[in-house]
Length: 375
Image (cartoon, rainbow, N blue to C red; front, top):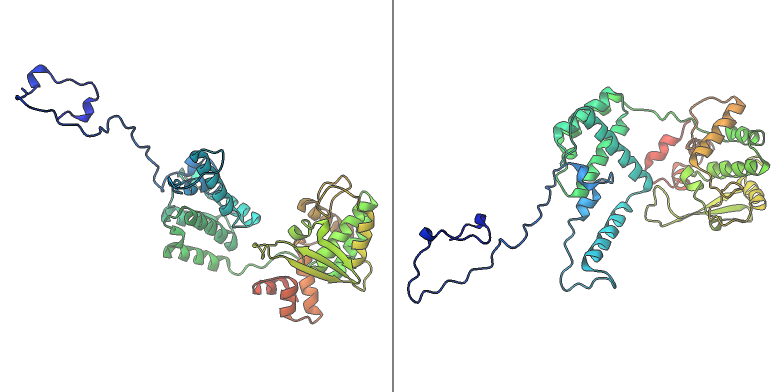
């Protein structure tokens, strides 16, 4: 028998050739494996994340495990089977990434980046499943660096999410890792939200300062309208800046705003808010929306709140204008865009509105709204 290692074209030396007996027939050789290419070895699941070529949680590796189409499947027109499979992988990636919100995706991406930086500082490589020792050392690092418990829990949750995507053992759910997080929670204690409520009285002073700060009357009306409906509608800044012109209307004494999607509505069931006219003319949302409609130029932008040059308002600009108005009034404190939502919830509670109604108005799905009421 010829050893496969000797390769094709090998010929036995004469002294090793056996004499063939009369009538002997050479047996038919089975299909040789020498001529077939060696199968390409796939990397095991617990390898470094560098091979994915992306920072997107290693999704290409996971989706790459989708089985190839069978011979009975019908590929899309004008595409080869390989191209068709590539299209399916791309669509699978898109669907998986679309299962979480953009903000959650960014938060998880930041968590992965922080974990990689930690590993680099320790001279360690990123491998999956992540060893328990690496996770424990990471939590210890977060504890020493003064990271808040909620931030640390977010980081570990992000790493858990990546393991689930890859379909591999999730060491973040191990007993000892959970205990380390629990210890960090006890060490930090209950943290209070540093953001100060922007109540109606502060809102009035903020809006009265806008004409002195803004570059034009249009900008003044623009931000007055934004601030008014953000407060009265208990809106998140991401929601108010995403309002389309077709999604808002004034009907009698009410402003109706369609919110197609929000933090607590990732499936896009949509919600319509009805904000009523307020007795305080300086902050009344109906008054400001009508005034803004008269000034807003016709443009090709679908968004409602844009500058005169048709550029959309950003979160940075929202916060920057808020800080300028507070500074103009000499108001100090940790005010942020979410302070409008906190302030409105606080004012409603002071007016005697029930907790269940406040929860419904703010579209909260849990009892987290109680953290927004500062009495």
